[in-house]
Length: 259
Image 1 (cartoon, rainbow, N blue to C red):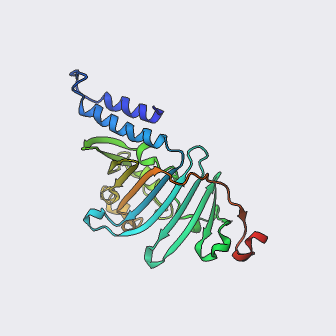
Image 2: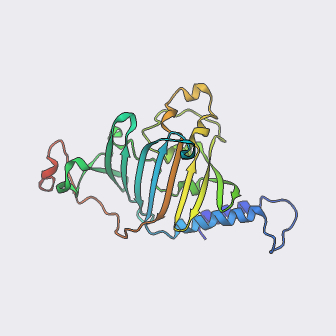
Image 3: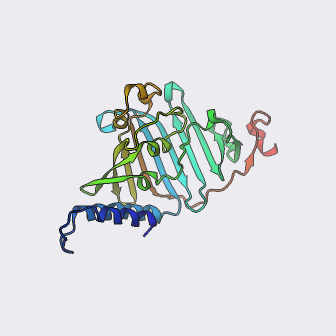
């Protein structure tokens, strides 16, 4: 059992009343802890975590529209990430591939063509070009930061603190965040689906907990619902540093391997 999972289970198991439950009559609190722990262990066993994050205007069940997609692979052993961004914010269609290695960010664009597939530009110090990457690249953040509330069948209803929700979404969407009370959270659901773990976070509901003055400081219309999935990557290849690093302002992408 991971330290995270053990801590969750101990906390949840100690939240019941004073009456002692018999082994054949597990409390709802214990079952809640066991279900959450099983999902934590499932992620812990993944060698490379494959994840998909999608930002919508509101809950898709209520007709929320997609505004942003991130597809990633994350290596817990190295901390390396591969992330593909697909965005149509404000009508500006973009598709970019990122590599994050030892704190440095590199990108490759489809417009460079197949000849430049192994060519990457270092954009670590360029906020305008790294805005799509989350501050927290470990996709397990909805598990590690959540507070479990109750069971709904096999689903775990939970809440995640404001700062952790924002850190898990594209960092460039909200650059001037207000100070909020410590208990400002987004409520959501963790759902196991065989090899897949699904996450849904009601970001729109979280914004409603802020004052009008706080909401006026940034555009909350760009984030209403965060949908995410995690699973063991079906691609067992390692995430490796970029083969060729070049400056596209100096060397044409078609010639990057000679730069």
